[in-house]
Length: 253
Image (cartoon, rainbow, N blue to C red; front, side):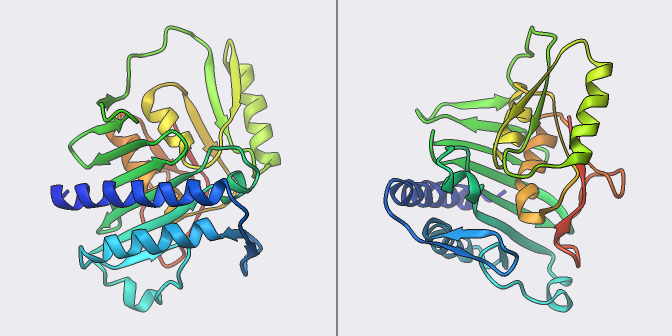
């Protein structure tokens, strides 16, 4: 990962995060996209800041908030950025605080760099392939992930607040029979990836749909922290810039 790029991206996500928080504490408009998902002024403000920053790298960007170029063109990309300028828009609207910014660099269909920024507590999680995963705290301290292993034998399973799933509930019930003690925690957006990477949670399994920009940054952070991210459809690590940008189910542990 180009160190100059990293410096610029960190500066940009902090700027975008400040804009998100300013809007979060104000009156803002909410619109409905074609897929019936909500979008706010914060999504667009963050997208504007981040796409301008990423454009300096001269690598194409696939953003949730912009029209995606046809696969006939993007299938030839050797590198591409995947951007979710506000992951967890429903959490943002619901005033739950657990929303994030996701940025990932894809090379030959693999995530090779990922960054997740949490605007509320100003934490940066990032990883570059082969170089480890790190947390930069609000105070600027850099910590390698994961942290020390938890002493508790409690198995902590993470699930989404905004996406109920009967198949998942069945899975959790079966898992509970195999574990001495299971604690199901509700966590929004890509913060779930951060919790697994830190070692403060054990598993995040999902069956209903996500998009590539929801998972690409988290995947490389998870992998560089020594965890696994398995695509249920291929039983292998997830690949990106596919013809269909919608993900199937996956398990992280």
